Image (cartoon, rainbow, N blue to C red):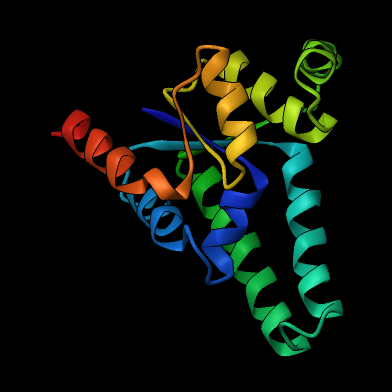
Length: 162
């Protein structure tokens, strides 16, 4: 089972906010070998930028930033080592497919690339903290969920894994 995470869902793993319990569940299941997570290489830069934004807004201090970044990097490398994480390169074909989503759905290019990456991988599920991105993904035939729908997604995954 392959679950595509957008940047906002990755951040929720490391910053306590709505959706953290869903992110924790997905990462824990991947760590235990029950499912595989996926995101685009572009997401890594976006996630690091969000962490830096939290620091600049004084929502976290430098020590917390260092801990968060270390945990993110360590966990990413560990999941790659155990083949429970797929990082999609930002290929020109993925970007070109994303352009249609930008034009037809008024998405930011990063959001469109995430949807295009999920489609390329034929991920079972797409999880995003952004309701509009989820709506667009669902409209494109991708089974997408926000943290508000975490109970439904968690139950579906548990049912599929049992």
